[in-house]
Image (cartoon, rainbow, N blue to C red; front, top):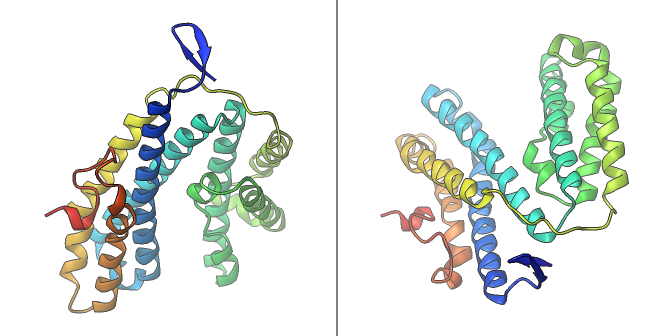
Length: 256
């Protein structure tokens, strides 16, 4: 239900249409970013020794995490998911990632590559996935933390923090099936998404694109895969570009 002038009513069709177009635009943009993220992760050996590249990749990853959170908030608000559910999931994601990073650092220290790989968990994997998958990821981190809790003290993780995550996980299990309610205000989340997208595009166009070009001769396959990934957004939104709300500098193919 939608509140207009103090009266309750259905969301106007024009608003629903514009919202759907906007969300599709965001999802397509995010798909391109995720493709780039995948290529960067798979080709770390090609760029990890370049300080400027490492710095740019960290900035990109941080902005990606921020964008994913904003998109999640926007979409769940429009679907009417309970505010409490969103807050609990975000709190659990923050602690889960913190503990997972600590376990991964410990795994690397003891050369346990399998454990390190299993702890490649980002906030976006928890926030931007199904409820069941999110709960399973959190549970996996809790289990591994219990196994290695003694060693994790050196990485800033103690039993209190693990217990806090266990509590959040239990609360999420209880509220996942709770009734949905309307959220009347998105509190500027649309503008935050646009702003973060502009930041990410700036990092890609101003830094990473140029850095990838600079190592084309020594990493031709990485160069090819990277710029293929940068084209995904244009391909996914070509049919709807005239209706989208983000029409300038949307993808690598549109930037010239």
